[in-house]
Length: 570
Image 1 (cartoon, helix red, strand yellow):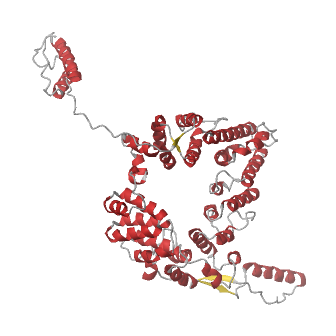
Image 2 (image 1 turned 90 degrees about the horizontal axis):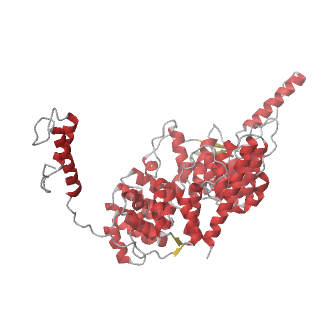
Image 3 (image 1 turned 90 degrees about the vertical axis):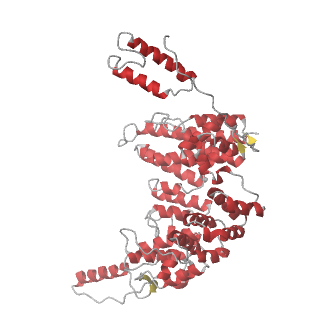
């Protein structure tokens, strides 16, 4: 080469950009520095580019050595059995959509089995193999529903690793305190130091842990800085009082009703209304009682219609309309919604402005009934039981609003007796229930019942109404499903198969069955794997699709059983 390179310390960016510009314009219009126009210009340009390339590659000064990261913390949990570790690697290697879409075939959906695997592994107290932590964090990054279980399983080493890769920083945000070690809950000095000086996430984690351990101590700690906290922080701290909520929290929550933030006031009112013995609940009971009464003189519509039919029949038969006897009075609930939302109601958490499409009076009325103790209504309505109260007719189309408010109150106060009354019998002709306004309301009411009763009720509902209305209800049942519920689901799927329709409309329930059905049910499903004889009105090829779906269900159940055995291995 005839050119000499510039000193290493000279800036190279401008020189390289100049050469690129010359190449784009052409050496006829612009020549390299130090070269005149002519046939040698292109050669000089290439020589200069070669020199500058070497300079750019070799002229980088070594940077100052960065501080070496701290070693990964020890994980005291026991290691996974080898078979379980191999299974985890297979589950993490599968990705959503990796099958290419279209027909699912008989292969299990491994991405849906990973949450169950993590739940069992966490319950057994296992630690992950270090080499699988990157894949575990990648899986959690792509699925927010997976993060709590994945980060619990990943433990301290996953958080250590997340600090070294920006793609995994979600783990630090998803974990309260970012994985910071909390002081021992008996270390008063350490607790107060972290509460005064810690980051917000660390303080939330500390308050939640202390609330589970000693509710009174957590409340007293919060009171020490309550007036100096930001409104959004007060809201988050107040929400932590849901754990261990009790009568001792009432004085603090009553003070929060006067908070500057509307959201804080609303949360405090909600928590107080969940305490039936609180002063707020008593105030709400007085307001709600003023809106609801029992009228013993109101005839029911059914009685009036029967009398009209009887009178018409008598007139048609004899030609003379005879006077009927006196109408039998049926007790009826009457409603007179509030005409205004006064300052006292607003202070107790009633939102004055109704949402779009809602009347103000019905909006206020629903909030009053929702916040009143459910024990109010037996006293107000003649000592009747919840089931008898729900069965009473309600005048002027107020039944839906009244029952919906009772549903919300039963869920908030965790009142199983009222939930049973509002749910009604699972075999009732109306799938929506006597009180619930939707299946979503019924699902919430079921959450107040114990696991066995919940499963039994949903099994009866499926037997009466089939699977088309049951998807939301199945979602609140404990996993694995109890035997009566599992049998009800399988029987309903078998009935749908025999009807000759395609299984696609039941794909959601089939997916739930793959994840929730007890693996011991696999043997009972073998009889459903054959392609059934299709009736004359069946959809073409539906039997083959059903056989494929049941084959996938059986394969998944047996895989779940194998996963559990691997995690139980010594």
